[in-house]
Length: 265
Image (tube, rainbow, N blue to C red; front, side):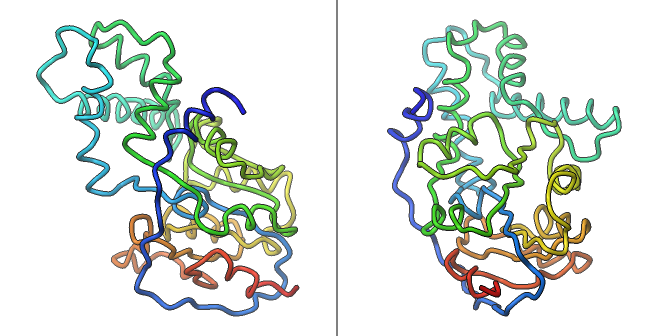
């Protein structure tokens, strides 16, 4: 195990799913032969996007920068978000509708813009910030889901530490795995799905499982995949009730083990 994956494993907090008050909608889906998964909120429990996560950013940043002298009095977390927004805006000018950043580049700009000496190991710094503000742990059944004979891929918004999470928790990595940070394009755009299909089977034979109706179900549906909405944790379940324009999934899971009930095995 790599040193950074070992660091992740050592600092992983205990987590249990917080059940969603929703009944599963399970039925056999004809013609499906393959499973493709989202990661965060689907195979990995995550607090990203919660109020608790947002409130942690400033205190976490300042605790990690305790050794730095003369920190500015303005919000460091807002400054970080602004750098990300600027990067997104620049990418949109080049024609990318749903851009993704490379978080290591953002951290480098963060230190340079504040005239602070960067840490000796910026990857470790970025990793510590992420696991302190967005703790992750595999859902029950995640390893079994990734080991299922029908599983052929992952399509996920991600950063450099995402593969380290899989390594840290000994989760298998499917051959057809596509991460947003490598192409600087994110969901809900269809770029990663279209790239997947260049090497993968026909979309109508694929069942894509994700926790977000906008970021997962909608783009998978647009490229012709069958879809499953995963409602496994209140912290990460994104049903988008105000978005009546979004497509409905073919099924709804409340636990990963239920996926076998959708396949003609």
